[in-house]
Image (spheres, rainbow, N blue to C red):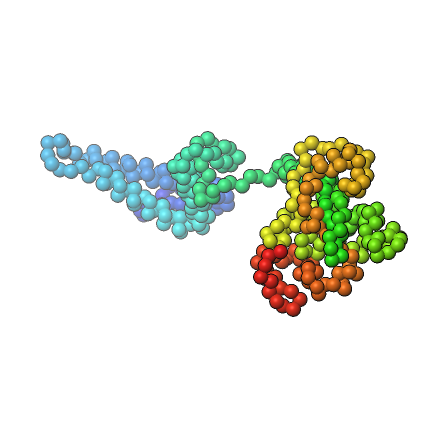
Length: 370
């Protein structure tokens, strides 16, 4: 590019656009353009200052301290700044490189405004820490103050720790459940065939099924010779009786065979009269009792002093035996239309026995509480 002296026929007062057009011919890189534009703007400002200085020297400045004439130097400087800003914006609009730089300047301005706004918010709400660009600053609060609780970062270590805690709680619950199920209880009962026949006490665990109790009561019936007045060989008759031939009636509720005592104990199931079907503790024993080689079936008539003492220590020994009835299913099928078998009903876990209206098979309402 040749730097020829300006012609005498050309006006010396060129605009910024004209000077940039003259001095940027052939440029390819944006950095070269920016450098050349800075030089042109600097030269133009220098010429403006020299011209202003020449005018000032030519015209004597009066002493303003002795008169009331206002100082317009500040207004003149502001006007010059506005003129320079307009010229600069016009030069950017006319040049091809101006759009890119303007966009970059706008992006920088927006980023600076966003940072300033973030800083203002964090400074007005001290007391917490905020992480910006990886650095933590003390005394700043989270920008989104509407969030009450900041969620904890779920790292792999945190996930493993939570899984270990859940597994520990699960094992603790299983141990507690096993301890409750292994606790022994005593259930006094009677055989019922229209009259109450004393049956004794059966020792079972809270985790046993109902059919386990019926099987043990069947052995008690064979040892006691229940029904001996009706048949000569009582033991052979009881040997023919299976668990499915017997029913457990708790109050007026027929309890199915497949339920565990643990189900009624943990749920505190209520039957008619607002009475629990199996009123036993749902807590595990504080001290684990040592298992003793005793007969699981104990009867007051045949148990020695040692077994009787063991039964007295079990929960439920003093319960009313007539509340628990062991009934032959064949007798029930023949007499279920006769009181009290007519008011017995199968257990339904979804039914509310407290608000039901008790009726017999004919639909007649009972006006008494059983």
